[in-house]
Length: 129
Image (cartoon, rainbow, N blue to C red):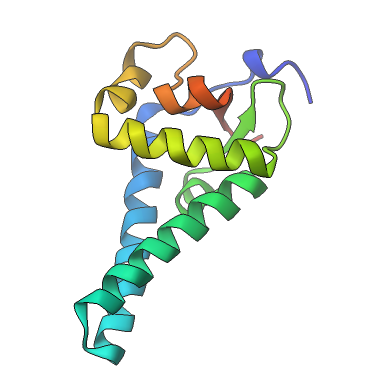
């Protein structure tokens, strides 16, 4: 792959839209399980598992469901697919970024359009070519 730094980066609204789609996909999946089981804990567990699987598998193959919809993907700063170790680290860093808020806001001010989790995991979110 060409130099990853020179690839067009995903816009903030594409990333936000992808997160929203991923969230609702997890929530709907959880709600279906809740309707079948009748227990809130079943919804919560399903929501968490879907979210974890979607992000981990999605990042490993380069796209979550939401990223596929917005035609964006995640790659390493070297332009390669993420290995499982980096997927795990990015998920941990993403969780920290999400709950600290500043990690997400970072995307707006970074010249490479990287959130704190992207910086820590050495990844870019790019427009899919």
